[in-house]
Image (cartoon, rainbow, N blue to C red):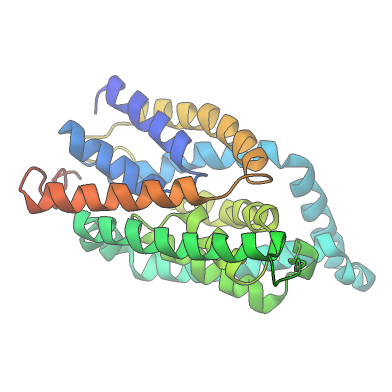
Length: 290
C-alpha cells in the first residue's frame, strides 16, 4: 500500500465511520473503484481505532462520568441505581452480541461477506430500514392533522432488553454495507428513542467493540501488502477527520432528517449492482489482498 492510498483510505474512514452509510463498504469500494488491492479487515479494524479515539475525546465528559460511576457501583450498592452506572453496564451488555459474532464469523467477515453484491444489497435494504425508522420518528415528533406529538424515549429510559437489541443491531455491521451507526440508530428509532439519544448510545456502544477489534487485529497489521507505516498514517488521518464529522453530525441530527443518507445508500447500492451486472466491476474486485 502506498502513502497516497493510505491518505485516501484514512480520509474515507474518517468521513464515513459515524455517518449511517457504512465505512467498511466505502473502504472496500474505494479500493475496488481505484483498482487498488482490498486493504483487508485488519486495516479497517485498526484505522477504526483512530475514529474511536475521536469518540473518546468528543464524549470525554460523558465517558469519564459513566466509567467513574460504574466503578463506584461495584462496591457501593446505592450507586447501582445511578443512571451513569447503569449506562456502564448497558454498554457492556450491548457489546456482547458483536463480540461473540465477531469471533465466530471471522472467516466469513474476511471472505464471503466482502462480496460487492452483498454490500450493495445491504446498502439498499438497510437504507430502506433507516428511512422507515426516520419517518416514524418524524411522525412522533411533529404529529399531524389527526395525530398528537408523541414523546420519544431518552437514554434514561434505556433498559437491558433495549441494550441487547441495540447490541444485535450493532453486530449486523459485521457485514459491509450495513453500517454500525446506521443499524444501531435505526434500531433505536424503531424502539422509540429520539434521534439524539439513538446516535449518542450508538457512539458509546461502539467504543468497546471497535477498540477490542482493532487490538485483536494488530497482529495481522504487517501482513500482506499493507505495512505498519501507512496503516498508522491512515489511522491518524481517520482520527482528525472523524472528530470533525462527529461534531457536525451531532448538530445535524437535532434539526435534520436522515433521508439524505437513505437516498445516498439506495443510489450507491443500485450503482454497484449495475457496474457488477455489466462486468465493469468484479464482485470480488481487490480480494487478492492478504
